[in-house]
Image (cartoon, rainbow, N blue to C red; front, side):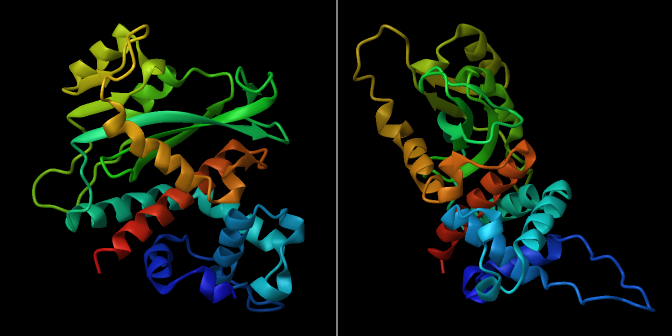
Length: 269
């Protein structure tokens, strides 16, 4: 079962990014460390099922839940997930499946059952404690960058950080790309200050105006970001936030984005 959770094409891209294991002692070396691929299978199992770490079936995965959680912490602190995401984006660009000229941005609220870092009372959920996922996607809905904030943060405050978080995507001859030409967003991002900031970076803002009649046509382009949230929330661990540590939840978000990119990349083969 554990091998099925980590396909060969995913493992081939993750393995070179993992930090080296600690060297074993010559005398009294103790138990042999669990294979990294098995631990990754446990992490992906939790990402898909939202099972509590203590309930991970060790007999099916091949290692204990504590080992899976510790590897998640270690790899998150080592920056494995952003590197994996950037590598897959470069492969998508090389195959012509990434269109970065037009991007869309949006945010989505999730409950935070255990509170923790980057949580706050949600204005859309009766002030229950929650967090927000913010994502910026290309024309096809491929996630380019994702971030996590408290549930009471305004979407527009994450507009520029998301634009800055787009990695320098390689994959083609010439300079790496990390700047779109046009950015689409709904009325929640309607603020002239941010329009000016986008224009200063050479990005044309296509943001709906508050009070304007519906039917601007922007929905024909920006609907892809809503679909991306649907893709992300197919991973049950992301529908509600269970990790108290914000960096670990962010790591799971980035891993899910990488899996979405890999699924799209498979269509080119």
